Length: 113
Image (cartoon, rainbow, N blue to C red; front, top):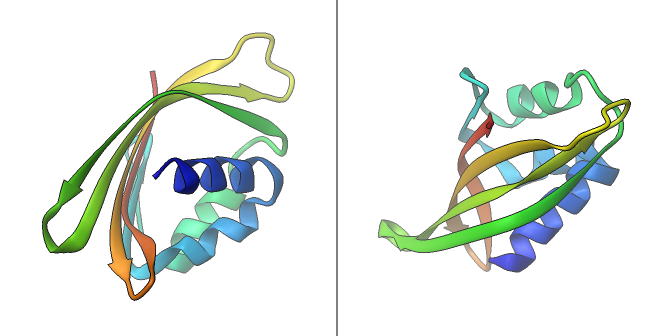
């Protein structure tokens, strides 16, 4: 799952619009307590974040299998945002579900620490 995590944060940092394709209409996201459902709503939220440039650094990652072929991914890291002197600490959980030969994000929960 390191490949997924690396891809997700690299895409977030360089081409945030490209993340929408990782979600489906049934996907849910909680971002700092706000909830969004569906590919379009999640994509709009990600594009509406109040910064243009950022850099994620993953510090720790835990992965567990879940029922129905899913994978639970828990990430702890640092987020450096433009015009900030210090990185922000964050935690993020992904519930990945199988879709043929690939995975999509069914659930995504993000919090600054």
